[in-house]
Amino acid sequence: MGRITLNNVGKSFGAVEVIPPLDLTIEDGEFVVFVGPSGCGKSTLLRLIAGLEDVSGGQIRIDGADATGLPPARRGLAMVFQSYALYPHMSVRKNIAFPLRMAGMDKAEQDRRVAEAARVLNLTDYLDRRPGQLSGGQRQRVAIGRAIVREPAAFLFDEPLSNLDAALRVGMRLEISELHERLKTTMVYVTHDQVEAMTMADKIVVLNAGRIEQVGSPLDLYRRPRNVFVAGFIGSPRMNLITGPEAARHGAHTIGIRPEHIRVSDDETCIWKGEVGVSEHLGSDTYFHIHMAGRDEPLTVRAGGDVDLYHGDTICLKPDEAHIHRFDEKGHRIE
Amino acid sequence: MATKASRAAARLMISPAVLLLLGWMIVPLSLTVYFSFLRYNLLMPGDNPFVGWENYQWFVTDTSFTAAMVNTLLLVGGVLLITVLGGILFALLLDQPMWGQGVIRIMVIAPFFVMPTVSGLVWKNMFMNPVNGIFGHIAQGLGMAPIDFFSQVPLLSIIGIVSWQWLPFATLILLTALQSLDQEQLEAAEMDGASWPARFWFIMLPHLARAITVVILIQTIFLLSVFAEILVTTNGGPGTATTNLTYLIYVSSLLQYDVGMGSAGGVIAIILANIVAIFLMRMIGKNLDA
Image 1 (spheres, rainbow over the protein chains, first blue to last red):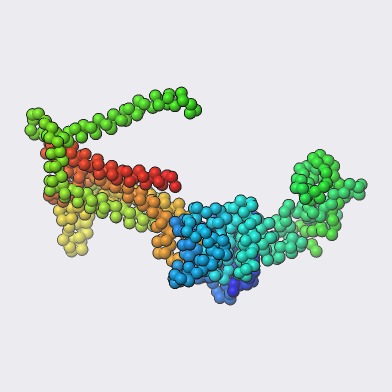
Image 2 (image 1 turned 180 degrees about the vertical axis):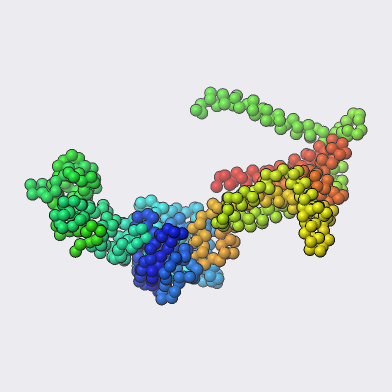
């Protein structure tokens, strides 16, 4: 069980309000990702749930019981830190067993649970090593092992993959997703990487300056961003946001269109015309950064891998009208 | 730049400094060793015959030598115990966020800058004096007989003074070590259900272990040679109650004018100090490797 409810939870450091009061429900078994640019308060929100910071107002309920004033250890949550926070002077075995030892569990049960966690995480051969002798990915797994032996109500991950190199990050992403499939435990995951958010989450919470901009499934957010911020943040490469007469023509202050919804056409019926700037040929796809008259920022367009256009070529573009997102002056979506 | 020619030039240019340092060390050392084998007392002029190990034999079999060794051990051990335990406590306190942190830290470190003779005199006259000292006044104010520290508990008083001087050093080193502890480790331990005593015992103390060894070894080197505090307070007395090895060497060579005996004591002290120094070098070397 692990249903976490935040009612009106807010946090201020002195006079600075980091998180204005917000409401959020995390359902049992859900994989929720908090995503946002750095400094948006996502880690603070996670630490409020963990109990490592005191809330300035509001109530946190875990499985219906009020946990607002409980110390971290009694909330039944486990956390994986960005720096792994392994205990350097203890062997992997002792690291994983530490929470059990603190709970006063008997030795045989400790050994059984550590062995089980080590088997699940492929750490059996490393149990007697020190954290300093392990690679980054292995350390990450030890940190996860230390979390799962407690059989917590929910796991909290604080940017766990940001210290790993790109290849390892993809691998660990899959491992954490698999772990969630197997354990079916609630997981709350903080990241600034929207690819991690898109691939892992059941539900994404997009945060900006402490406020929740939108909550929804990854594809929901991708297809129907509620405002300009979410539109610009979710999706890689970013959505093109266009203001001015072109937007006015669609009856909006800002219009947004994703790179894959602009077609490159060679006939004379082009709607937008521009000059190719940088082009990134990935083989399967090609991303063109196109400079258009009257726009400072280049427009990003995704085309097939077989489009042979290079720097300085003139290009003809046709946006897919059905996929244009329209936003008003305040940045809200217009249906 | 590491050609054969440049290396040779480098050696040539360093050599004056190296030779000077070598002479600086070797000449007094060999003279001390040489004197320690002579019957050489300034009160008995005449020739100074070679007497072999006689000086060592007399120095070691003297009853005050045993007393001095015991006192040295008690002094070093006592001060180490107080400064390490006190240093950990002070470091934990100073690590807390508080108002006026900078000023408080400077005040804690201040005793380290007071000269040994000065602090010995201040403690002797202003604190521990049974008539004028603050402790005497407090005792009288409470209706108790004042303690005459230097005659009733002489060694303990010296230990107290020296501890006061070295506590800042231990505090400073341990505080720096404590501040280098990753806060996320403590938070992780908190999430894992460790109470404060458990976090101290399982996370902080192992983290401090190296700093504690460094404090112990460096202090041992300096505490073996405590002298000024004894000279200005008790003169090694009453009897030999506060005579340590350094003070005994002073007594032999400068009060009894026995150069040979004093040199023999000096050589013994050098050997003792070097045993500690070897451990210190190894420990620090290991810390630099890791």
